[in-house]
Image (cartoon, rainbow, N blue to C red; front, side, top):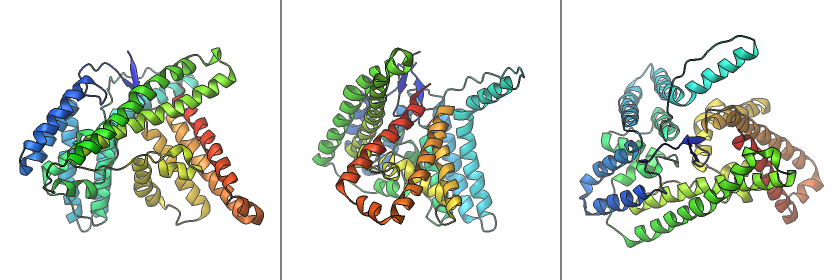
Length: 404
């Protein structure tokens, strides 16, 4: 079966999906204007239910049964998180239960087959013949995104933020169709208040929204999909190409994944803007980053800030000794790599990112300790050398990410 690479978020997704409403599909070209027209002629109090129904139609067009999955998780979090907030003595316990329930659901659908395969391969290496069961689990689209949004919601309510008391609004927060496939990961305190605004149609919504959608389609269809042909040829038969060819192939993948992912994000932001809603920016010229830390401030911003706020900081962040800080950074990036997909190459990519981030911290310490190097590091020549070096470090990481 054919595969599509959706921005590197869920790895390679099986393409047996004639009815799936992908952003660059003919179905979406009909679906989006229809919902847009109905939304702006509908009274304000009915707009959330309308978008909620549209979002479930969008999601269930791929595999209807998975509508029950997102609904079940939505209902469970809607009921359990306020219960956690009202608990006095066992608040932390209930937070753990809510997070565990979300992560276990994600693990079953995304990592169960990977875990069984890993155990099977490990036993085979030890000379033990074990036939693992075939689970036939199909990865639900967007599950990594809405599970992370649920965990964010639980963590923020645990920290004292108000819970959402309106179920349709909470359900739309999780299922909002522009952000279902490839994010960005939304924050409920930013998204939910927008649902209460009695907005009137403005031509700027259509103008700015369509600009983003068309720009996103150009990135995805004209650039990413054509670069994918070069990348596929190189990574399918690397032995047939020279070292220079493989470097060019690696550069091609760096821009393929950027244009693919950034294109989907632009379409998501543009689609949301058609209804007057704003979702987070996810990219800020990542390939002109001057170091790997700067790269992660520019690449997949909604994920990197989520990992910082709900994994890195709870582990201790930088508020501890140097080596504990490096441990926290390493764990965060390794798990961040595994979030992208169930495969050892995703884990290795995350580990690589953790290692080069730690190396960057040590490198900066060394630069700061030597006077003339510190002065040189402030020059434009050093800046552009750093941009070039950072780009190549990132490209080396993409080899781990892409290679099968």
